[in-house]
Length: 203
Image (cartoon, rainbow, N blue to C red; front, side):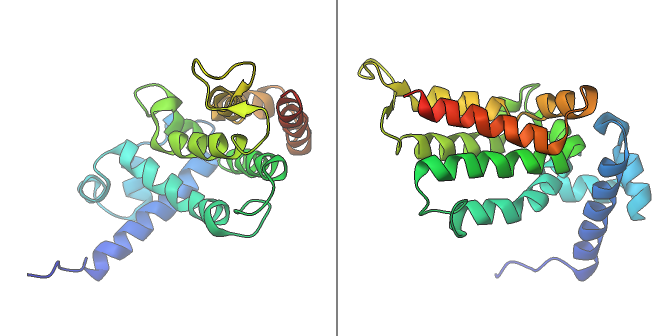
């Protein structure tokens, strides 16, 4: 028997929930202030609808984050250079980091909520491994970077370098620098570009 398509009202409810959650996360001082009850009330649905559609609060946050991230992910996967494939590694890597930083700045509360939802560690969140794999692959195209391990010799470990570069875009660091220290968007972008250039130039 063919799989039944979701009812139109279920699709509408899902869209309403994501829109309501999007607005709430964007306008609260802390992601922790946003509850499932808040989202259900704002969307005009029962809490049961949320749990049936998303499983739990983490599932809802993940779905909203993925919806926001999709345009960037598509640009990186199949878009034109410098974000997409085809750009030289030394040009593509800074472009990807810059785009990721801008995404975190534009989605600070949501990113904080998701990065804290992976067993208390952002490294356990599913999206982290995707970005790490991408940066590691790009770095391996830069002369002087290796796969690491006992045969690395004096080369730089692409795996470790990818972790270090991603650490500069962590949501908690972005929130601290932009929210607590008052760094501007352009200041953060410029500093990240300098950092990436030094990592790439140190091999």
